[in-house]
Length: 154
Image (cartoon, rainbow, N blue to C red):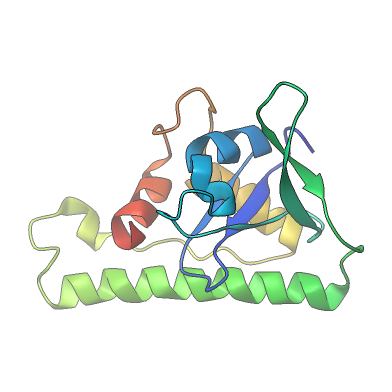
């Protein structure tokens, strides 16, 4: 699991991140578990749809550990639907910004956010490439799509 993409999503599906556990925990910091009260709490899921929890590790940092029963097909379908809710919100907000002139003069305003569909492992793999956090030592070096998600929802 250390190098496989993990989904971090807010309970209301308004923001998500996809990346390795180390990259996500570095990027989210205290927001990972809602510890600082500043950011939204995140729920974490692995490629199978299993819920993960933030736990202290031996080095004094944090790690993600499996929490709960094995996911069912219905659990995976629900996660895919939640990802779709987020993707639809991004598409709607971008279209609104273009239609109302908010994005006037912004060359990225003509871009449409990609809509990723498929089985959960494939969706997470694709989102990790398109919108993920490639390097945990560079917490602000997200991809253009990742940075767009922050601009829209940050």
